[in-house]
Amino acid sequence: MPFPHPGATLVAHVKELRRRIHRQPELGFEEMLTSALVIGELERLGIAYRRVAQTGVVGVIRGGLPGKTVGLRADMDALPITERSGEPFASEIPGKMHACGHDAHTAMLLGAAEVLQTHRASVPGNVVLLFQPAEEGPGGAKPMIELGALDDPLVEAVAMLHVDVRYEAGTLGVAGGPVNASADELRIVVRGKGGHGAYPHTAIDAIPPSAAIITALQNIASRETDPLKSVIVTIGTIAGGYRNNVIADEVVMTGTLRAHDPQVRNELAPRVRRIVEGVASAYNVKAEVMIDHGYPPVINNAELAAHVRAYLKSETALCIIEPPPTMGAEDFAYFAERAPGLHMRLGVRNEAAGITASGHSPEFRLDEAALESGVQALVGFVFAVNHNS
Ligand SMILES: [Zn+2]
Ligand SMILES: [Zn+2]
Image 1: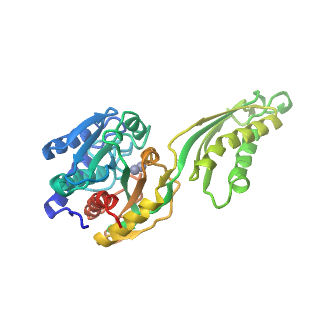
Image 2: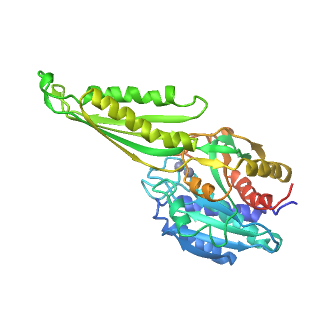
Image 3: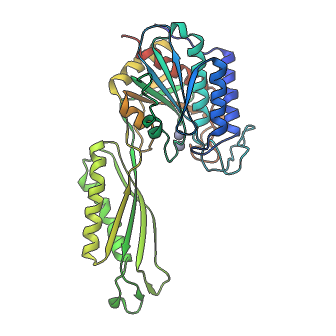
């Protein structure tokens, strides 16, 4: 069963929407202009919607044919970066930039909404459009779900696109299994007793146990975890001490804990605590470990991935690949915990045009030729879910 593809006028409109959003980037839960733009488009198309989680918007398209309810998610927030891309439509707000492509995600979902609404008589099931705030933090997916974004109508499969500058435009990555990692924040405080550098025996130095803790924590990845299961234990910052001849009374370290496998993730916190407390006791200092649980791993439904891959291969000219997972994090994980989910990667690289800078960098750009591919992938997902192979 073929599906409707976006025409040239609609593709041009998606590009224009993307540029409008790009000029006015907004940070997490401040997406007022962006959600107003989304609502304006949904009203123009006659799509029913409701506001969820401050700036989030949920639209519902009722298809004319029987079928499943499919969710499509786009994140809307930007990053606190000053843009240096050189694009004529670069950010007009210093210190804010769409450096992760969420402007494109929002525009492509609006494009898909227009295709689906225009052809709704031949669309199977319902389509729930999920315009989400604050993906870059503190996270808009969880509050949207808690406020019922997936419940009315009940979403039975859900997908998202993320632009990916590692792959040329025209490429779509669809892989089963874990595609992104969990990301938990770690903070360790080591407390000793200060003193004069000339009389270390009268003090309790917090520096050597901190060094020993950093070294001992590497054992989690190198010795305690199955080498075939990905894990990251990184200490990213360390601060302590006053000057060269003073014994430091306190050291504060922060880091990130990441894993693909939920069980490996669950074992990280007790392992970190055991090692930190053990080393602290050996060095006669006190240590405090704080772990702030962030996004879970994104786990794509393997069956759904294989099915959608086969369908899009037969119905589109997209170059479909199965990219390896990354240790990045995405709060789409919460959607994929509630319904079979698919995080798809949309290639936006254009080596010939010099579009190679990575996401989250001030030079980030994307090849807008990919916008059409993205709309196809989103609309195609809806039809693929309802297609019996
Ligand atoms: Zn990002
Ligand atoms: Zn992103």
